[in-house]
Image (cartoon, rainbow, N blue to C red; front, side):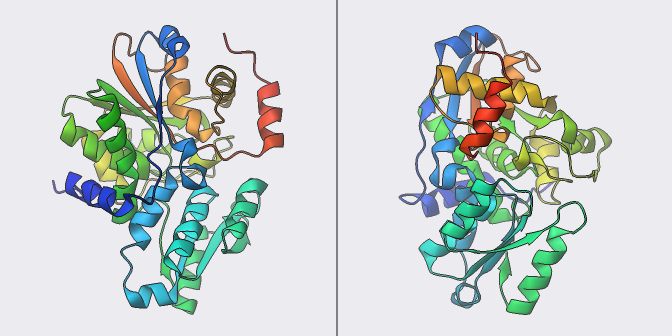
Length: 325
């Protein structure tokens, strides 16, 4: 079966991003290793431009626009990180930008998106369809719609996170990646299985929104209601038509973690590693900490996907979690 992207697409995206995206650090923690029995390498995309891996895919896609597309501008729909990434990329490339965002998105993400120069169009995620809104505005204004994960250049761009991780950490036995719509894990799996064919790629979803886990089990894309989870970056309702076959072919399995487990991981990163990771960004680490995945004795890469959480909410969530061991 021919997949939507190949490793050559990820390498081409890396060339487009060179000197534009941050080459984020890879961090380790002896405490995390002792806790899991594995040797963990955390790829800190919480320190990427706009605070999330999404910048990679956004700039990868927008940098390929034709002159006519750049003049018309770009529109996207997003709970926050993709919108911020599109806004910054559009500003760097000098094009108009509008972002469709849910009314209940974290205020810090709405404010940041506006701060990057985007027009923000709010909608009710429980009663309105963001995809329909985005497509309607794109048609009315002559803009190009860039979805958050179901786009080949976006998927390829996200895969550069795993490429950099492997270049720095070396061979890995497993790669653990958070899962929303599948863009990040799809791109990461594509390059990882090319460079390290024996490396296991495992995805992690919030327990309240395991549409990808169910989709892979049933062999078809399952659509769910908006999941009730603090992992707002993973509140997707279905996989993408492009991402789903990649996961079917390259991802070993999907596991889930609960919101309290995400909060415990957030606290660990703050207290022990002195970094701020948003709930969605903690999915992979939480699965390892809670032994939802047992990779004892293995070299494991973990993508920390983002760090966009406002101070008040961060403090409130951490107050509910016990101190890290």
